[in-house]
Image (tube, rainbow, N blue to C red):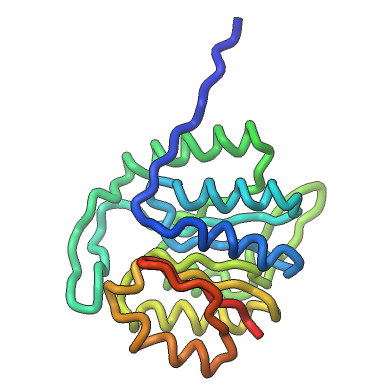
Length: 206
């Protein structure tokens, strides 16, 4: 008799309904979904569940260096969390077990955001009977460095790679005063706020 293993995930944020709504809003948009900051995998699982619920043929990528390196907590703090390689290994054990069971399309990229931008500026290769270079993003969840400067660089990278109707979701918005420092910039670029939670704000691209 074969044992059935059940993956376990934890989250370290709130307003996860904004992520689920973002998948629905971007259902007809071409491209990958992407999460900067995998951590414990709770948010990623919800995104993958929503992709499956809406029967989308979409690959989700997650970018995270782990390694317990210095982490930009806010505009004023740089510290170390427990985002260790042991956390990475446990999270990926659960994540790939979940993907095998749910037939979700998931790629983990073990890089910092700036390293990802340098190495994948011309697209992310995916393989499923044929090789495809994915250059567009339908949904991006920003949950990596939490300084306005770092997030603006992330916005600039993804803005030019998102079609109309794409979704941005920003986590821990109070840590870097998102409303004052980044909301006006996003508005200028043509992004419209659709959800304003305690910790997450969601936008769609006009």
